[in-house]
Length: 306
Image 1 (cartoon, helix red, strand yellow):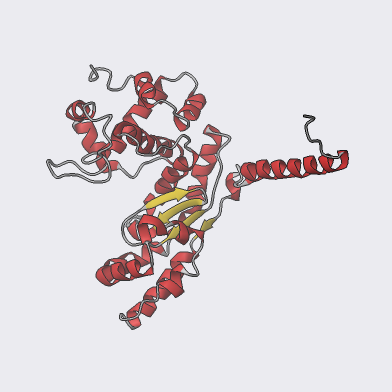
Image 2 (cartoon, one colour):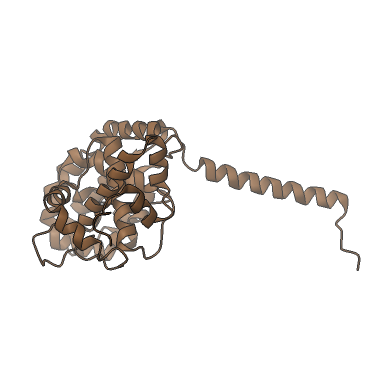
């Protein structure tokens, strides 16, 4: 049977539409966010909105103003902080009622976030040096339900302002989330090794571009107890149970939270230090495809893995 053929004019029209569609898609993916550090937007208006809602709450604590006066009029930053964090207006209202004094204590600090924009942007310039393809999304400073200091998604970086008790840490937190934004090959249900490297490499590269990391407690403890922790970690590298290493501890000893950040930092640091081409090393750290191979190439833990 002879194959069906479109008339020449119709074929040309369809091909033109396809080309326009493909061009538009490629252009969007390439220009969704600029790779010019000066293009990044630092948005703090959601903090102002929250405190207006908070003042309404203080006038009448039986009324919940956090939907209409905060979430509903919020930026993409507030929307990005909804899943697993703010959750909804009712949850935020409950947290504020329970911890209103804690919110009050950080009010002044949250209203100073804008003052750190220049220092944050300096870290963006540093990333441009180390990793020229980097993209610079908006940075949203929002107020949540006291359960997250920061996160990111495809629309930007989100900083939980109420969790920041020391404004001097803001550039380091933003740098950490900026590195996460550049990382590729995110996984579902990562192992302890994978997630520790994801977090620790964001700490290491974040420190490289900003000058410091906020996980000083974990780093100090890890360095003091390195041998014991390395012996324990190698028995858990394939586990997806993060307890005692990431995000929570069992209280079995005096360890702080997030020692997995320290472990991932140490692995990444050694990988970077061994590399002859440091800029290429940064590219590789941001695009790890095989985490066990990355660990082996770093040489860290080699004396502990049988």
